[in-house]
Length: 487
Image 1 (cartoon, rainbow, N blue to C red):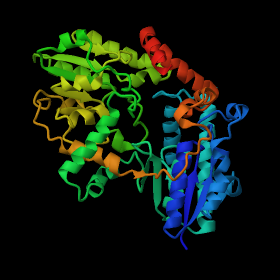
Image 2 (image 1 turned 60 degrees about the vertical axis):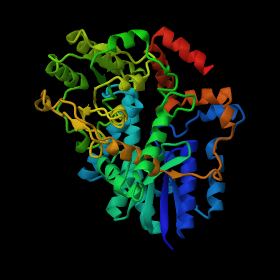
Image 3 (image 1 turned 180 degrees about the vertical axis):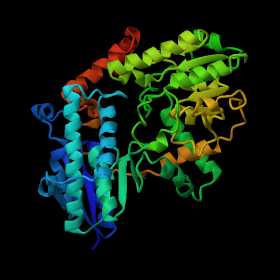
Image 4 (image 1 turned 90 degrees about the vertical axis):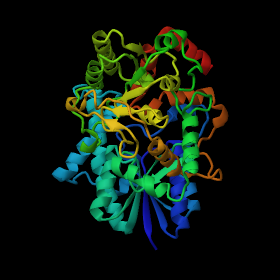
């Protein structure tokens, strides 16, 4: 009988549901499932909700039935404590991969492109997740050897423990399968490549869409676009409260003119994911946009800069740096119409008025391209090999000829979007939710417990700071409206 290993690295209810689904799939295939729980060595909290507060309120933790559920599939639960060795030494190549993963995790945990390891709390987390990576490498190696594992399932692959599990499987010569939350509520990303694999994720378009007609592809892409449009059910957290009309002053500014749109992105999102993501030579997106505006200055157009709403979620020092970059660009181009992150302006209505769109690497470039708009990316985008978009990765590539619009073929964008939807596996409703409360009417105390663990932050202090930063980085009117809508 084949033996397959599933890594469990946190107790988020959605991930627990995906792990159960994977275990069931392994058993259905005739193999034996082993689940290695690595939470004991994690350098950050492994719960989505503050466990102490949930217990105080009388709620059981989502993971309380883990052993019972696995036993129902005759799956074995392994604890990382039984496979540990503090004496394992890493090769230079292994350590290099670990350090990249550590930095990538710190960027996420501390919401900044420049985590300051001189701060004790940052260095403490860095040491903790580095240790977790080392211990996970050894534990997975020993698990593979002891149970003759033929395949390893692990979440995502970007953070230290995940990255080192990938290394352990690769060195043992066995395949890995990565899992992650999917595009839809019941969707589960379960693929033989990580979500950050730029090449394989685009190469998969051919196989995922094999046999589908252009009409079926377009219809599937339309469903994805609808999920991101403003509505109470929107899967796009930023668009849910956007109005269905543009403010009058913006309509007036753009009326009757050729419109060029610039969109900011989180420049930190794809740092430390490998050299294939760092092909540009720009110091920042603002430097790139400045050169584009200078190159097109003799054309008759109006330009706007749409600041990404997630700017509010950044750490304060990162927020101030990004804000300074935007203000620098605005000073150099006084006619640039800046639409700030806390202005409730519908991005999709802006796209409808745009002749050309420039982005760093963000999804809005994909959404513009599927609308038939010429799109240029200043950095490597995850969709650039499939869509009818163009890159300008260095100053030498910015010329009036290179910035001339063309008749866009939206088919590639439709195909990439459809792949995002169809590559997911849908978890049947027969797989119960792991939450122990009514998820359709989440109790107030559970919301507070989530706030204290907000966004997978490395501590309660960081979770609270993240929530405070969101409000301090938005104007009073936006915050007031946001709170009213929440209530």
